[in-house]
Length: 275
Image (tube, rainbow, N blue to C red; front, side, top):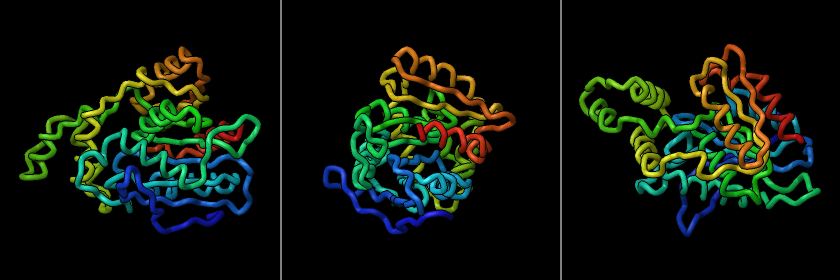
């Protein structure tokens, strides 16, 4: 892999509380002089699975970009706090903001390509990225959102059915819930109860992308066979109505799982963020 990175957890607090998030800052061998990129992974994934193992990190470092990765609460190498507030989208966005500032990101300044922050989010990370961009217009320069959706699938997750299944094996009737739980259990590093806390917290903060629309340019990307691609044009329309520039890219033959590995996705993102 090109570049170097700090492997230890970066210490930062929000309102005096340590969110126990594992953060790494990756430096390229040759810096392109552009703003850093924050990567936000999806549900039941991690920065390693979503960004390192798929080649994203190496690709961005080779392009000379400084990269910030973070494992969300209960995921990867991050801790699993007991308080529900740590898992709410609003708290996670506050943590991401502090992480960005701790890594040296600063507000966008006209004429200074090293200022600001670019954000790439996938799946749940696209929801968080959309909201982060909408609430931090002075910091975020551009957004790349993969596997985006007008609704958050986790909001419809059947928590009671999942809890019954974990307790005694009672079958889960809802296919989406069963699939998400199976995916969560497939990764040994995941804390399943922390992930259920995340789902519960998400239910308390419903996702409505129309409530706050990012005003910076964005690239929306989805696989051709990803059911979430159907609502991508609606997100682009919301952005256009708000005066934002929104480009769309559909990846032929890809689904929600395989889109993240696409080289065409990486190349499009790098070109878009290099502007």
